[in-house]
Length: 296
Image 1: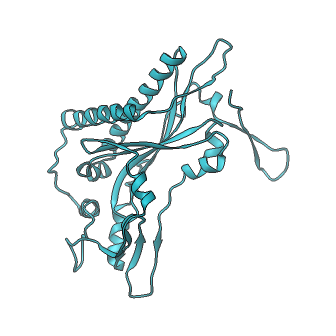
Image 2: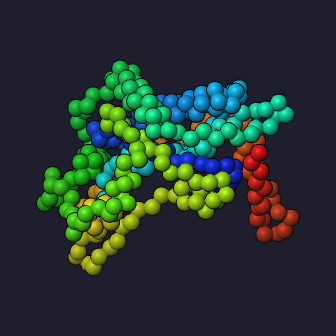
Image 3: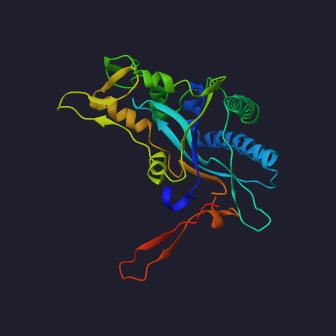
């Protein structure tokens, strides 16, 4: 995705987390997850545009984002959160008709303002607009598995209701403790924007587009282990427990987990000018050549 969608400008990864009581609800009701996502991006886009328009005196500045709904953490616990990849700034048309890039970097104070506005807008929309009930009970097996996953508990079998077993707890490394402080929190909502990729680092941009999970199998009859880097060497699952954890993560039919906003939306007016073009080669192999648009 990195080479075929993003221009050669700096990009920043933003991560939005929601309160734990909301994660099961949003995972089970994707229309609510999409609503919170739209509200959050509206705040981020508005701040970036306002900063560029005030500082550089541009008009009608725009940006875009590609968002992936990440549904689990390293222990396979249901942990719905959003990874946004945005250009580290905005585009605005100049007098010559070009779309030069204006870089805008978020400050800690700006993140605090944005996460507070996101929390307030999301809760108002969920409670008042959608009538969300925090005490809503699971209705079927999938929802029961999902609720147990969010709580990091076992849902079925002899250990039903008990916490997932940990293997060889270890203290977190110093660098992991340091990175955990880069985000800001408000009423359970969190916003992190400490990771960015230089314009020339296409490999780094590709890594930012990827996600990974680390699961290792053990000998027959032994539990499987999901590795985690912070504080615990691994979590242990019996075959039944591993199956239920994986089942809880299954995305419902016809629900998208990747979203395109702003200038990256399918029918955005500026998309054709910003997204690298692909043209067919003259050879018989049917391959295509990528033509990157140079960053102004």
